[in-house]
Picture (cartoon, rainbow, N blue to C red):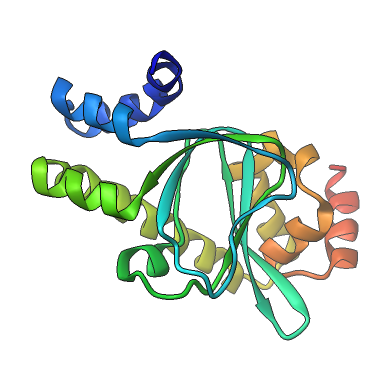
Amino acid sequence: METNIVLLAPLFEILNDIQPLSEKLKLLFIKHFKIEEVKKGKVLLFEKDICKSLWFLCDGLLRSYHNIGDKEITSRIMYTGHIVISAGSFFTQTPATESIEALADCVVAKLSFNDLQDIYKRFPEFNYHTRLITEQYFYKQEQRLYMLRKHDAAAKYNFFLENYAEYLKDIPQKYIASFLNVAPETLSRTRSKLGKS
C-alpha cells in the first residue's frame, strides 16, 4: 500500500490541480490501482482486443500504433505522468484500433474499467476530473493532426522536438518517422539539415 501511495503521488497532483480529491477517494484509488512492472517490448494492449484498463505511467515510455497493410503507424508517444488508454475502445468497451507497447522498461499503475465505473458511482464529482482530462487528450490529438497536415518535414520534426526532445534518444528513428508521417530517409535528411542527430 505504501508503494501505491508513493507511485500514485504524481497522479494525485494532476487530479488535485483540477479539483482537490477527498481522502476517501484517494484511498479508493490506492486500493484499486495495481502496480505492475512492464518490460521493454511488452504489448499492454493488442489491436482488436478490448481496452479493459487504463494505466497511469509512473515511469517509462510507451507508444500506441495501428497497422495499415504491412505498415505500423505510430500514433502516440506517452511518457512518465501520462494517463494511458485506447480511448475509443475503453469508453465503448469495443475492440481497439491500436496496440500499446513499452518502448522502455516501465512501471504502471493499472485501473480496471469496472473499478473506474464504481468510482464514478460512488464519487460523482470525479466525473469533472475525467471530463477535463478527456478534453486535454482530444486537444493533444488535434495538435498532432494539425502537425500531420503540414507538408514541411522540418516543421513536423520541430513539433516533435518541442514535445518530445527529452525522449529523442529513447525512441527508435523508425517510430519517430512513422509518428511524423515521413519516410525514415526524409527524417534522417531533415535531422542532418537542422544539425540535430
